[in-house]
Length: 192
Image (cartoon, rainbow, N blue to C red; front, top):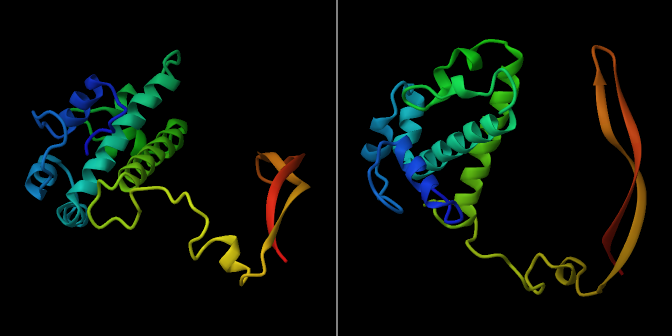
C-alpha cells in the first residue's frame, strides 16, 4: 500500500522510510504503525489518521512523490524544493508553505496533486478499505449507465462534432483574462 507496484524497489524503501517502517512490501497498517510516527499532527488530523491509517499512508506516499517531482522539475533552479523535506519528512510545518512566498503556491499545488493522485490510485486499485471505487474497470456497455438504457431503449447515434472553445487562457494582473480560440473535435452520443 505504501508504494505502487510500478515503482522500482528503491521507491518501496523510500516510501516505507517515511513511516520509519523496516518492512518489505505492504505492511499491516494500524493507527499505531502510521499515526504515532507522525510528529506535529493536530488533534483533528490525528483523529482522521486513526480512522483511516491506510488513506494517511497513501497521502504520505503522495507527499513524497510530490517532493521528489518538485526537486526534479526545479533541479536546475536556485531553489529546488529541497528545503521542504525536513527531519520528519513532512513539509506541513515548513516556513515556505506557511508564508506567502512565490514558491509556496507552486509547492502547495504540487503537494495537493501528489496526495490526490496517490489516494485516488490506491482507491482505484482496491487498496483502501471503505473506498467506493471499484477495483476493475467496466468494459462492457450493457450496464445501467450505458447509452442504451439512458435513451430508454430507443438507441443512440454517435456523431462527430466540431466546436470552438476558449483555450490557453492567461490572466492579466488585475483586470482581464485573454484566451485563444481553439477548435475541438469530439465524438458525442445523442439519443434517437
